[in-house]
Length: 327
Image (cartoon, rainbow, N blue to C red; front, side, top):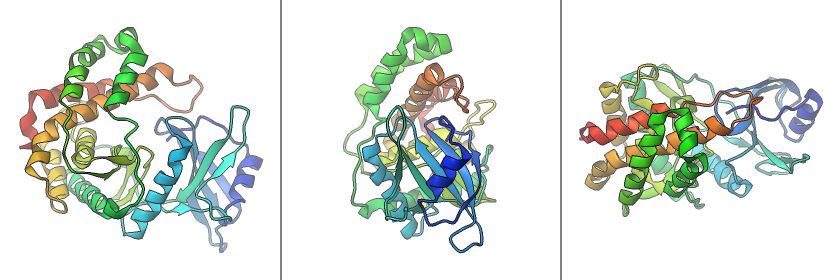
């Protein structure tokens, strides 16, 4: 989440009037994230009792043809009891609305606000709860009828690496250029086939999970969701949750709890478990590449701070050296 496009009060109020949510009371830009512009809105509510929502404007990395997949998936999962925000349809029943602009139309969607906070230093109990909810999501989505290829798969890592270039990667950190040159071809060549697939979140970092204590109250930001290897989603979450953000140190208690929580709902096959070390290396590479591109290309006036690609890049080396963490 971030704010790239600035909307005036009158335009914001007119946009919100297209939904049956009452009149706009306040709008606050949300700075976290990298791909879309987002605001926390307060309205009078359809019944006058007050309500909160999240408004998202899709800026880049989002093909508008994919929006029905993302937004319908939210409704599908919410209807099956997953802690996922519902999409608020406009007065005509549409999943999103368009805003004309000098550089083309931009789509906006309004979604339900869920309570909770994102944790920065998760406990083992919190990780266990997240693992279980991720598995429930995978099971709840088995009958979701739409499909979408992973736009941030191996081919995209390779494209981003080429777009950044060896010189650009070295400007970020010489170590990053060396990691990409050595490990990206190896991971791409060994990427597994034949593992179970399904709908995955693909970006379940702590800032995309809302919690109250040890209870998960919201899984949010589904704009990388797709159909891919199910265990890869667990690997992405492992990369995101199992290392100390400040020191980079691996947290074995969080790792064990995350996997135990997942398997308490959906046990892994032997083939999935054997593939996890490579899947985690791929997940680390994916975020290193997208963050590197953002680091080099985020506009200077955007209300967003690019994320450091070296965190996931160094985690890649950990997984390559210690595959036994998934044993």
